[in-house]
Length: 626
Image (cartoon, rainbow, N blue to C red; front, top):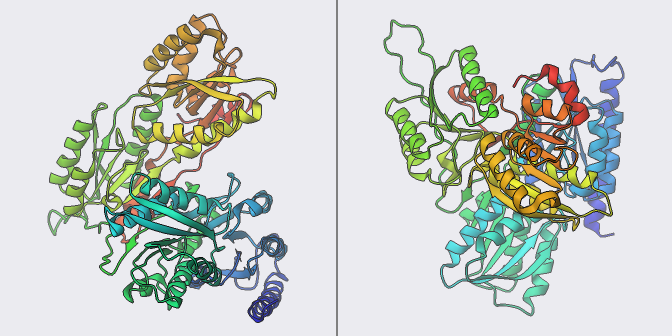
């Protein structure tokens, strides 16, 4: 064991002793979960290490936010880079009587079972880097694939059309964070002249990154850019390059922690070419922890924080600043907030419920809502958004028909100083600061959950032929639900998608597409995977017309879980439904109020959603609102 490792272990033991003494003194007089020593809630924070400035910043944010609440205390642990130690730390924290666990992970796969076990008893917030599965209360972090994609685009712009050679320094091998950042980066550079000539895993550690790159540079000098998955490894890469006094190697990092050795400082000193922020999320974790512990309604499942590109010319453009409309006169009462809402259409029962939720929530919140229906026309939606800009509304909200084609009108809204909130569907624009926040579902995860259930139900000896009924082409739900389903199904050779048909989320299209597929495939079809309930219910009618039994002869999986789908589930005509929450109105109005109070919104607020089998659908029907 090196002197450095011994010092880290001694420091860890001292911290643990202090934590044990503090925790025992705090909970000795507690009764039935209510703490009597001047505080109400005890929160445990489990870190895999504190050698990264990013994790130190995370703890500092947590401590600062907790200090604002006299009725709250926090215990921190440091696993010193050991997954086994972190699992033990979590058990000790639970033994101290914590009310909520905040855990950040280096190796999510190794800790998944530990997190799931704790989640059965107390709330769990996973912070910074995700965990596999769905057994947690809330995830607060960033979109790592998107960050990787941004880094890839920056690498292309930096090296230009001539291209160049890249060394990629990854974090812990097998980590979902590593896989997603790498995938995004590689997808972005795929059609360019950039080439990744070496990939190495430095386990998020500066010294290991430095040592690995020093060894590699002994024999290889033909490198133009280093892409490091975090700021610590980027600093290690810089030191390795300095060791050999190699000029003109660009280094891109991720984290953007404004600390003594943070990426903001490294960029300003030209040690890094650029970096992409990955906010620690400590303050957001505590804010949501308070809501969770107070049993507030509408707690999301995921909160995705915005990432920014940092260069030597960086300007903070993360959010459009909210400027409420002036009162019409000084004698009148305070004018209500005005929201322009451009709904995509009324194509389904889900959409009708979504619209009603927004209208009802605006009324309850005292917000003036200018509601318009675009009747499934993107051109009309753009026209409506421009009308709202002219009317100088306080906030614009809309559910985009498709992902693309919004850059120009969103730029107009940003120039007018009007924040834009995406409700239910996302957009794909060149500059993601053109919109302020997205509130809705994780469509990709919905597809994954549908596929996981199918794999669990499959018989080992059988091969399954699947017909997929897609939603509106190029819409966010259709893209995400297809991608997520294919990710999981593609890992099992028992399944094959024999037809993937483009519908429009309507019952009529679902019936017509399914009838045509049955004529071509007949009884060879084993499974129908529908991107929404309306198309699934149309498919049910087509299957019955064909003389087969939906839910028995053909397995039917749907997404939305509206009341009509739950009824079909309860009588055996559907087999499984993944929930897509339509009741987004209250969260939208809360976001509007938060903006008016000067609060910064997360980039994405992902709703909490369940799944329904034929058995659980019967129990849920009575309380289903839509």
